Amino acid sequence: MPELPEVETVRSALAPLLIGERFTRIITHVPRLRTPLTIADIPQLLHQPITVLHRRAKYLLFELDNGYCLLNHLGMSGSWRLEEAGSPLQKHDHAEFLLASGRILRYHDPRRFGILEIIPPDLPVAGHPCLQHLGTEPLSDDFTPQILIQACHNKKKPIKNLLMDNRVVVGVGNIYASEALSLAGIRPQIPAGSVAPARLKRLHKAIREVLLAALQAGGTTIRSYSSLNGREGQFARHLWVYGRAGEPCEKCQRGIIRVVKQAGRSSFYCPICQR
Picture 1 (spheres, one colour):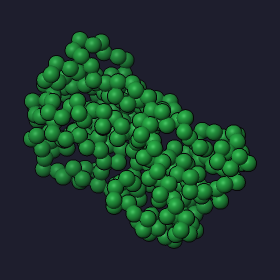
Picture 2 (cartoon, one colour):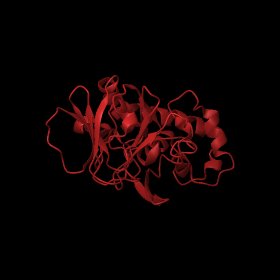
Picture 3 (cartoon, rainbow, N blue to C red):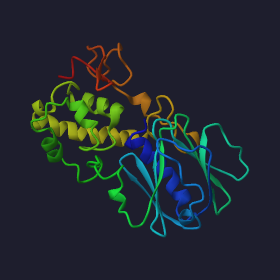
């Protein structure tokens, strides 16, 4: 699933191309994605300049001049393409946004777990059900070591599970939680409340370092993620532990990477340099 670096990469690629553009027609080809798809030619979305393209956690927010907002979650396999008029429709293209410039913005989602919904002006964007319980942005100034220390206090939940709880910190996800814990030298299974504050400060730094490095690499393409127009992320070549079960640890040169299941997700770690 695309996490913060992937979604931010998509946002930064789309924003300079879409700010000031207008939707002149919206066509949908399926009745629903994760939720019902009811955006086709909604009058309030048409002929309004796109003023801002935000990201909140793993959501893209297309804000229009009249106060309406189009919310998008990429789900497991969602992606966007910006193409010239007359470009052929591809299989799994579920929504088309015809633009005033003559180009077409297409939403592609083979697994159909994505979301495309409208937020009206009378509802604060932060009050949308998808957004109202989200935690701190890990690359913002609000995400301090103390925030992480407080979130872990007296928690029996494994530290990796806590990092993947979007009510605590958003967008870290499975890959980057594993990588940050590796960088900080912390095993993913230990209770969050048992991690000393000094180690949590190292983890806080590691989370930011890993996410920023992934952003610079355009995200991580493991299976289906791609940025605008099919561009793949390159961070997979820099992974220390994720997806490397049975391989030697490149950090300590002594351990063999192990994998365990936590809350239905695979966690990768080195038993020597993570404790």
